[in-house]
Image (cartoon, rainbow, N blue to C red; front, side):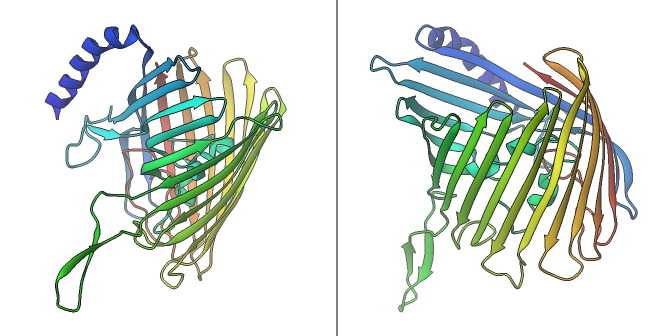
Length: 357
């Protein structure tokens, strides 16, 4: 894998000058690490280091003779904590990677990237990729919707009504292999795989308002089964320094006996009390249609900007679990993701640094 990284780096070095002659090329990235104290409320309480969705990427954009613009992005995850993304020694894991066209008609792209449903979390994503990430209560078990779907075609409309956009996406298949079954003669036959995903979203972002509503459906052969999700989120800047938002989502699985319906709702906000320093907080409640399976996520954080590119922060977060819930505030978006214990309240304290370049 190290050879792969070296080859990619050498290739980028050689190709960038040539590409730059014809297109705008940008190399960007994020190094995001944290020192965490994690306590599962039972036997585990340890200090560790986590790499939090760190990444390296390339963006290319070129205006065409007909007035349209072609664009491309290749983005990979990098683990700054251990050099690997998981125990199998994977150094690179594909993040948002796509190619597309944009113009007066709007924007169309093809590839693997965040679904419109996942992007609709944006207005209240104040703890993204940190201890306290709201996905720790919105993305659980088979009710997973905050996904980066492969083989996706997405259309985004031009802005209308002073700030609205409509997005539609179709994820054709998770893999390139067909489904199989036995016919009457016990012969293996191939058939279409019913594992598509469908997304529809409406967003509004103008002035002090940031709003999104989204619906997503996965077919029966998709990973985690057939399911539907609805999400609405919004935030309003009450003052230039105070941003307050809320979110509601409802999730439903085709097999509701094994995977009961769940809804998540709550509020989150940020307050900038000094030119380079802010405080943030959130509370989200997960209500499951089953006995003793609910949970509450609570988080507070303090962030200071050393520069436009560098920030340091401290977060304290907990999940209060019912007897049949084992959620934690640290699982999503991070490499340090120890499992929780059913019926125990989990607590995480994180001191982090993020460098965007």
